[in-house]
Length: 116
Image 1 (cartoon, rainbow, N blue to C red):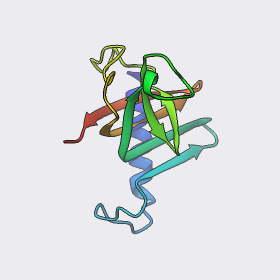
Image 2: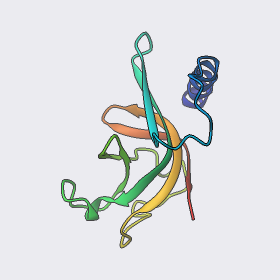
Image 3: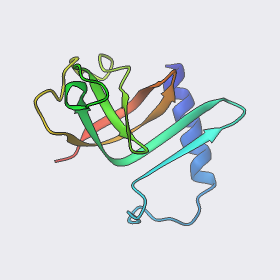
Image 4: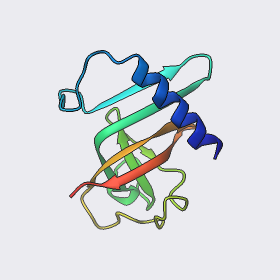
């Protein structure tokens, strides 16, 4: 619950400081912002890839990962999102939309939705 409240507050603050980009602006598919005083990195990915760790050379074993800033990061709250430990095993990668935060070397998603 605390994470969802934090995400909601951060997203509300972000809307107040809009830089004039529109929802149709796809030149940058992802943006991350560090909130210095809070010490967390909030990530809103409009379109990224989710993949099983067994298909990622650096990982080599099953698990759920999302691509952030060119690197795959473990999705640490898969069960809360209703995903099994190998949600994307055997697939080359699944396009997803997600919002969440980087925390303790992993990614905590507030929402994660596959894109057809």
